[in-house]
Length: 111
Length: 391
Image 1 (cartoon, rainbow over the protein chains, first blue to last red):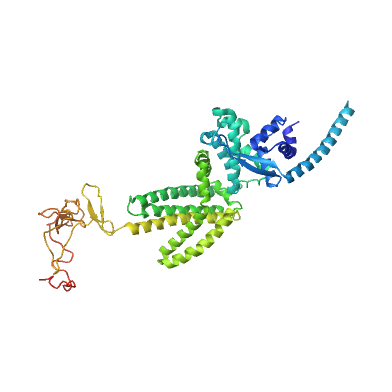
Image 2: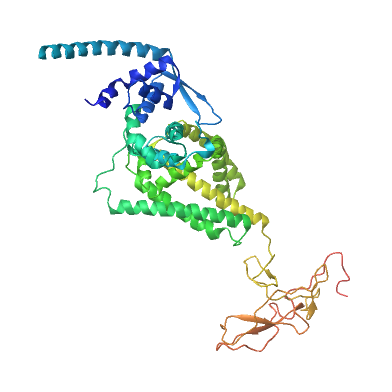
């Protein structure tokens, strides 16, 4: 099954979850998502998601200038973002629970 | 993280330029912001590969710029670009007009630059040499551009299809990848309000020159300043879009070029004198009148109005004054041409004799040909306070 299709629906949740731990800039968020096991996540998708969440008011940003490397625009969860994360997480758990049960049940019957 | 602004790899600039081009239908400010973020991100990605990063490496890692842009667009919820109109509407004429607009647009830029250099360094002596063709090119380019965007929902997208338009994005990316690029662009952006006033000044100057009235020009300038700042703030807030934005840009271009022309004319009027002492193509300088024609002879008349002959002319240092190198008459010259023969007393002795050319192209006998004859017409006038002048 193509995980990139699945990822599309839950990338918002994944990004919000990563930012709950610690503020991060685009490249950093991509790296943390991949380290967590979402190896197929696309750079452009993550940046686009961050941008959309920011414009939706769920994230705030601040720029950390750097002498050596590029400027870093850090994204951080605000109240709206935490609220969104809570609701999304609830939806996800219910959905995942239903689907797991369905899949396990179907597998048992098949077995 | 070893990359710095100063060593940002050209591959990053190329990739960002391509992404930027894909997203060119977005409003300029939004596009600049996205390009900035993408550039920062790519700097980090490029740093993983060190000096080995090439455009190929970036494409392997991130996908083609077009795919990257599409993915970004989808994830960020950005509007999809207006599709290229169907084939029959993108006919030969439209493509020809696009080419013409690009051609005259670049011509206008090049000629305006030449006109500027020419005016500042007074190379050709007449500011219209390049300014007039620049103006004509600009007008043609703007007219063509308006023709292209009429009836188009997305005027910016239409203009992006002009030949060489992507080149501009690449130039901007190159500038941004330089260490001085960002500060320079920020400086230019911060000068926006100055530009709002400058274009009102240009309109005022053009009006003053065309109408011949400084007061009217001032009045136009004051009204235009208010309108210009209002327009500028609306444009900066992205409240002006589509064909109206293009119309504003067209007026901008016209005012910028018109202002340069007027400034050139004013500069010329302020510094130009009636007779200029300029270097000719030969070692010997000559005198030229207001029209640029060489002064070839001098006819001195005395206080009593009688033509003086064999007058020797010297300057303040005692150097003889001649009128520069002059061509001698030669057989086969046109019969309207007229030459002078050097005075036997020397080149600084006037008047010289005039040598005409006969209808069959032969040099005629040299003769004194004073414009007013041997005596100035009209009564002899005595200068006030000098009753002895005639004695």
